[in-house]
Image (cartoon, rainbow, N blue to C red):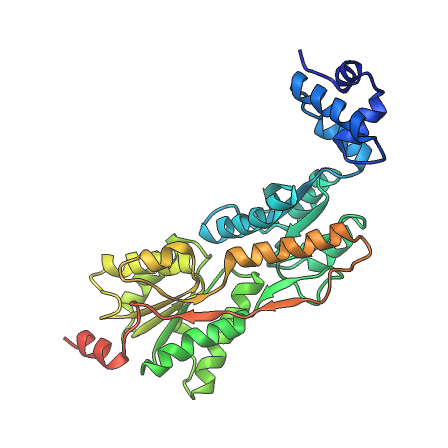
Length: 341
């Protein structure tokens, strides 16, 4: 049978309230009494009921994480970063996906209401204003995008800067016919990366070619499909910037299926620097975002808000990406000479 708090109180010769104060570390109890209660807890193997304890302390010691998807290395790294910061502070993590659907996001938030002490939330699309109105007022939240769009503190990646780094690197290598595999329509990160791509080209006097902007959805298969279209273009691009690493990985496979090698025939750059990027053959040149660190920093900010309810969370924070140059990019003159044979 399950051991209850009343069993512990009876074994220790104290009231239920005294056991509750010892277990939850609230209120004043003499050391002798506390030792007696702890001994009874140990001897009876008592495990406090989380729901009952939350009613007493008004804390669940659970952080909710709401992400647009549950698929892929990027989101796994975000979760790893959140957990890395939450567990040492005594918090568990409850994760849910919204499938980038504003209505589903609202349903998830309703389901989490009362079950979590705070939220780390990513919604890289429209509906942030509605989201701001729907978040429970008494539940602290940190967003992983949407700076300036809501009343909640935010960490966001400077996507435009990252895209410019990627394209500038290819331009520095002499590439001028550079394709871009876009992210999904309506996704704020994808839109910013497309804008950065166009800005980098314009900054070097390279005219944008709509035929070189290929659709994608941040998944490997869309990168593979883009590679098939790239292989058929005449003249063929000498370089490709994919809006994330998953599509870059798919693009690499698709190019090889068409008999094209990276970087000898086409240079390839991704975005995110997921853990597997460095272990590809060739190792992927990519825009590095410290993904797990972003999850940890968002959680640390949320924990500060939980520790001090009067804290607003501070100003929005911008994560500045860098470029990890590896083996998947090569000077254009080499690529062109290969393509001409």
